[in-house]
Structures are given as structure tokens and as C-alpha cells.
Length: 154
Image 1 (cartoon, rainbow, N blue to C red):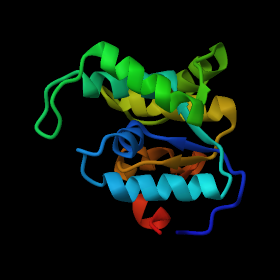
Image 2 (image 1 turned 90 degrees about the vertical axis):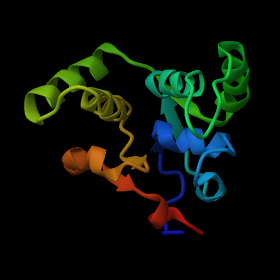
Image 3 (image 1 turned 60 degrees about the vertical axis):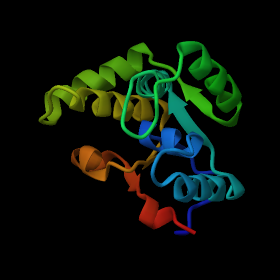
């Protein structure tokens, strides 16, 4: 695992939370080991309302790797998971950050979701993002440190 400063807040992208929790997803074991390493290093792990909604949307729709779960099953799963994470909530400041990002960086469609994660991170002064989709966030790299599985693998 790359050396991470202890107690550094780290935001987990939806793809990380899904793979951490759902054994049927590829990279489950590797992501779980990386997240557990961050916890051992006393890093504070953050998610947001958007990540919770995206997690729920993925698990309640049919897909090749996992069958759809009922909303009640996903809610129960989240109730078990949530105590392990700090949850960042949208605020007026995060919306202001989002609008500035939209003024500054080229984006459209689903990229707005990525920008919203960045705006929430800016609002909460979270400087590190653990994601499997580094390319989706590289445009924002001047604002944060992107962490990948390769960097965090034990």
C-alpha cells in the first residue's frame, strides 16, 4: 500500500463502496483490502448522499454481475454500512462549488455527477478521492489527489 498520511480524510467513489460491500463485483477482495488498510491507517472515510443514491440505484437495477435487490434489502445493507463512514451532505456551499466547477471545466451529462462529488469534497475540505475511474476525475486533479487501487493495494 502506498504510504498515506494517517488521519487523512478520503472520499470513496461509488464504485469503491459497491466493490467493498458486494462480493459478486469484480475487484471485491482487492478493494476490501485497500479500504481496510486505510482504516488501519486511521484515515477518515467519507461518502455522500449522492454516493448512497448511486449505490442504491446500481443494486436495484438488473445487471450482468448481480441480480437486482429490493429497495428494502439495499436500505438494510446501507444501515449496516453507514456507521463505518462519515457522510457529507449537500449544502449551499457545495452547490456554489458545483456551479463554479461547471463554469470552469468542460463537462456534460453524467460528468455532472463527478463534479458534484468534487464540489462536496471541496465543501468538506476532503483532498483525496479513492476511485476506480481515475479518468473521470482527472480534469479536477488540480483540486485533489486521486487514489487508485494500484496505489493502495497491499
